[in-house]
Length: 330
Ligand code: NDP
Image (cartoon, rainbow, N blue to C red; front, side):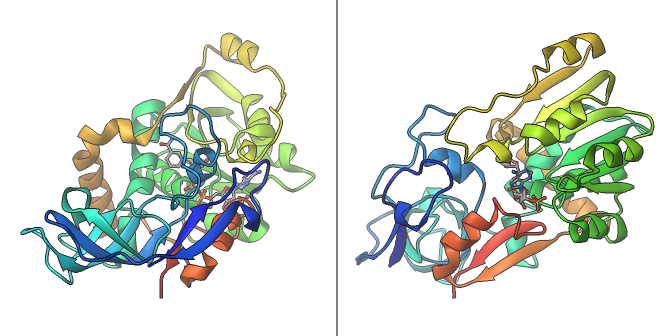
C-alpha cells in the first residue's frame, strides 16, 4: 500500500515537508477484518485542524501515521461474513491506497449511490452538515434572507439550495466571479458576491436589501465581519467552519461582535455534524428525496491520481474546487 503520513506539524500553510509518502506491505486480513482498495478519498478543511497538536472535538493526527478521513473503498479480501470482495464501503481509511480495516468500521454502500462519490458529498457528511447546520441551528422561515459564505464549496452549495427549497432569499459569498455566476445561473441562488472584489461590502449590502436573517458561516474572518454588520433583529448564525483562520500561525484579532449580537438580540451557535449521528437517517432520507426529485443538484471537483492528494488538499485553501473536492485513486 502507498500512504501519506504526517511527517511534521505545519506552522501556517502546510508545505510538502509536512507529509511523507511511503510504501508498506499489509499482509492478509485477520478474522473480522477486510482488505480494501481505495477508490475515492475525501480531502476536507477539518484535516488542517487535526494536523495541530491541540485539543479539539477529535484527537490530533499522530506523527508518522496516515492522514485519516472519509474514503470509498472496494473490498479486495474479506474475513467478515457480511462483506464480500467487490463490495463498496465507506470507511475512514483516509490517504492510503489500500488498508486493513475492522469490518465493523466499514459501512457497506447498499444501495450504491449513482454516482458513488455522492457518498462523500451531497449524500454524505457534506449534505448532512448543510442540512442540520441550516435547519436545526438557523430555523429559516420562508421569505427570510439567508447568507452563506464558502457558498461555492461542498457544504455551502447545499446550504443555499436547501434555503431555496424552504422558500428563502439566498445570497452566496464566494471567491471568484465565475463561481458566483455559477451559483446564480445554475444553482438557483438569488444573488452571490465576490469577497475578493474591492466593492465586496457594498455588493453584499445591495444583495441583502432587507438585511440578513440567517448567516451560515463556513469561512469566518473579514467575510464574517462584513456580514455581521448587516444582521437583523433575532438573526440566527450557524458557525460551521472558519477556513480563513485555519492556516494562521498567530491568533487573529478582529472587530468584537458581541455588541452586535446584543443589540440585534441575535443567536450564534457552533455545531459539529457528528453530534447529529442519531438523526443521520432523517437527514439522509430528506437529502435523497430532494436529490431524486431534482430539487438538489450535486457538484463535485474530482482530482485524478493518489499522488495529487496533497495538492488537492491544499487547493481547498486557494479555492480550486467548486462543490465537493474528491481525489480519485487510479
Ligand atoms: P469547501 O468545499 O467549501 O472548500 C473550502 C472553500 O473555502 C474553498 O473552495 C474556498 O472557496 C473557500 N476558502 C478558502 N480559503 C478562504 C478564505 N481565506 N476566505 C474565504 N473563503 C475561503 O469545504 P467544505 O464544504 O468541506 O467545508 C466548508 C466549511 O465547513 C469548512 O470551514 C469546514 O471546516 C466546515 N465543516 C464543518 C463541519 C462541522 O461539523 N461543523 C463539517 C464539515 C465541514 P473560495 O474560492 O470561495 O475562496
